[in-house]
Amino acid sequence: MLAPGVLVLAATPIGNPLDASVRLMRALAEADLIAAEDTRRLQRLVRSLEVELSGKVISYHEHNEVERTPWLLEALREGQKVLLVTDAGMPVVSDPGYRAVRSAADEGLPVQVFPGPSAVLTALAVSGLAPDRFSFEGFVPRGPGQRERLFADLADARRTLVFFESPRRTAAALAAMVQGFGGGRQAVLARELTKTHEEVLRGSLAELAAWADGHEVLGEIAIVVAGADTVPADPEDLVDQVLARVAAGERMKDAAKEVARTAPGVGARELYDGAQKRRG
Image 1: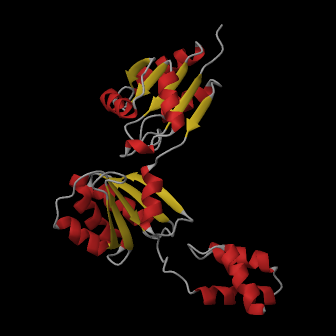
Image 2 (image 1 turned 30 degrees about the horizontal axis):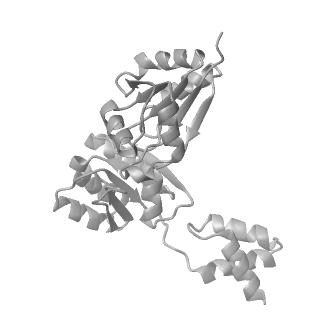
């Protein structure tokens, strides 16, 4: 019996081929079997990277995952190196891959991840909104009722929210966010990240909704929305809170950590240093 192979999940560029990692390029060249969300896009990628494939390529997407996951497992049992890639970014994250990972894990077959580009993290990083607590909410639901219920459920969430959306539905999604979160909530619309026509728009949800209503929205869209009540706190007030806790008997290090937990974007070290400086 052959030793089990390894299922490798590899992130692919979300726009710019130069973001491809060396590990991805080597994996493409060495894999015995490549499961690709779109085989034509894979071929374009390998041509741009000047990589020559030696393994078999099969399609693996949301419509055939159930049917083809057993193929991947059989290849793993035979000792093959199996590579799974999606159109862009990290497999599993709003893309195919979860079923394969879950099935491999259930059988005790090894799984590796070659990290790389991620539209979620790229959008969060460029947004300028608090990154300390965030959640990826996937694609905005298509139905108006589903959108309203989702945004109502998330209205009081204090974490930063990241959504994907189709360009055709972006205006409707932003209008629904205005109703669910309030027009004054700060947000960022990121379009075509890492590509030639990359665009990042910052403002209130009302401003972004007005922009989308008056423009033809094109490209891949990510919407990042600030959490509820995440108005930046005055650092001096936060230092006062740290010192008040210290006066009440807490260790300064612990006090700084606790206050930082309530202030998005502010680090415990920053508060600790500020409190130490204040005390002289």
